[in-house]
Image (cartoon, rainbow, N blue to C red; front, side):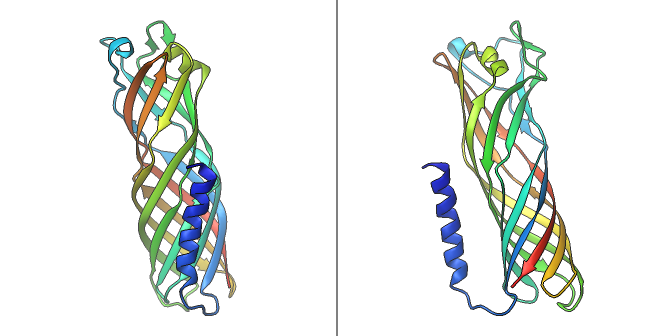
Length: 234
């Protein structure tokens, strides 16, 4: 299924479910802000067999560069203390950097950008807000589930050199838990400022294929994100 169809299907299902709930004044909220994403990626050393076998002593691993992107969310206020949040970001381009052996054979590896990808990663979270609704300042905790779809995966010239020729990259979709801690400050009746920190479990099987040979690894991206945003309730 193409990425645009995945996005449309996921969004329509969520919005249809929310549309079935009763509406009251200020029950809905849109938020817009900045996602500051840090990866603590850990991966198994890549493995291969036959002509794709990794020479003894070589360790092919990777790291993922941090990114920033636009954050947006739709929030349904279910009660004075519970919110349902559907959050996402503009899919950013993310660089994957080689880690491990300085070279693979005679080809530079460690420190080289070997692949790039984009990801669509919506998260649905139930937030519990502390203190009385009349309080301008309210901390909150959230727990939810994340879905990540990787697309536009591409090997760089450095990645092609490591693979021994033009290389294709695939990353499996991921579903994992997500947790959030945050604070809100109501500026006016309809306007609120937010700051939050979240961690998400994102794991994907990666396969790099070139000249009929493939190497694979499992990547734990373990992204954490700081979100700074403003929300408008209606």
